Length: 263
Image 1 (spheres, helix red, strand yellow):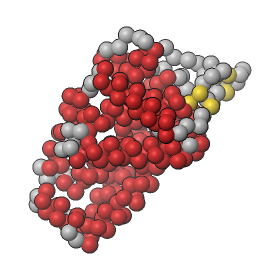
Image 2 (cartoon, helix red, strand yellow; image 1 turned 30 degrees about the vertical axis):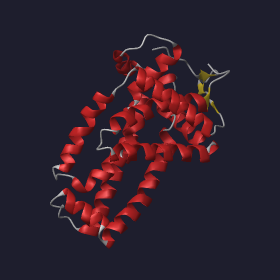
Image 3 (cartoon, rainbow, N blue to C red; image 1 turned 90 degrees about the horizontal axis):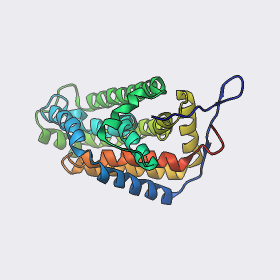
Image 4 (cartoon, one colour; image 1 turned 180 degrees about the vertical axis):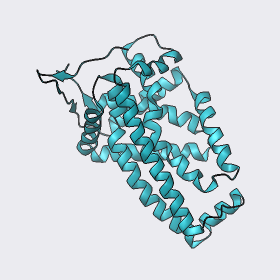
């Protein structure tokens, strides 16, 4: 995997890339290219193998109240889970030979420590979200789990506590989502593309969000809507939606981050 040194000066001061202004047309372009990457190398079976054991565990009653937070959690840890697909998109963009074995070449990245560190940070955010969701449900409904999926649905949509759960959960989840989006929207593709440290990647990602607040908010809504659609299609839709979003994230990074003139 070719890498590029992006430190400049005698004291090895890290070079920060420029961030472009983007609009809805850029999001449309990223999604179109991401869809093309997925159609060229579909990965539905791999994601089905990850999704359905989790769903089965929840529906069996072991973690039923957490099924919706778990599904929402895809948006929090998705940027890390998509690393292998970023590499496939990168290679296809460069016209390099591409196979599924290349998805695992990320482990040889010069930035692997930074990638793992940032992945751990996202995991901590995900765990904090799950603990918060669990505490919210317990505070409203008690610690006794629902006996069935139908009872759980009835509790959520047919009681005042359920509507409170929906309202508070949405508001709290929004805060977690904004935090995760800000630090990761372009940081993982950047780390894969360039030999930089995690702070450079995170600061660039935050700058991308601050420079394009409305466009990045629209991207967050697109991600949420696509994940919701995948969820409603009996979870099988996630096996298509998640890879397309991962491939599209690479192309979004390429639209936002400008390395022109930097090594």
